[in-house]
Structures are given as C-alpha cells and as structure tokens.
Image 1 (cartoon, rainbow, N blue to C red):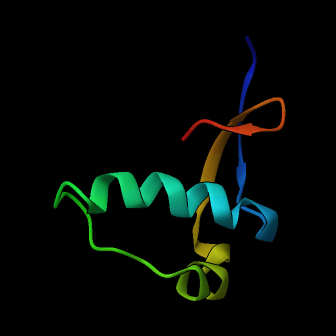
Image 2: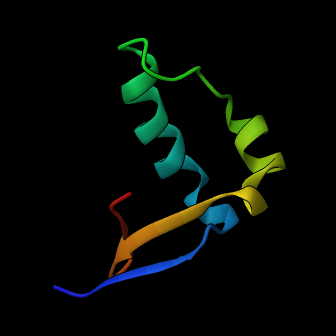
Image 3: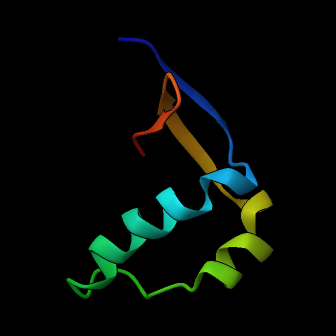
Length: 55
C-alpha cells in the first residue's frame, strides 16, 4: 500500500464532499457545498492510494 500526499484537483471534489459530509452530519464540521469546495479546491491537500482518495 503506497499513500501519496498531493494537492487536491477538481475531480476530487465529490470525494472530498462525501468525506466532509460524514463529519458534518455528526456536528464535527460545518457542511460545505460542492460549489464551495470547487471554488476553494486549491486550499485542499489530499491523501490518496492509487486513484482513491483516503483522506
């Protein structure tokens, strides 16, 4: 298993949204819309394994 850290790309937005929604539903994060994430995608760093976003 090889994990890589990289800047988020626009095609990561749905996966980031799903991850953030998990925590927003539990009151641990504020919810973010797809539009907000797309607009601020350059602020995100992700961890991926192959083409799968893991964090």
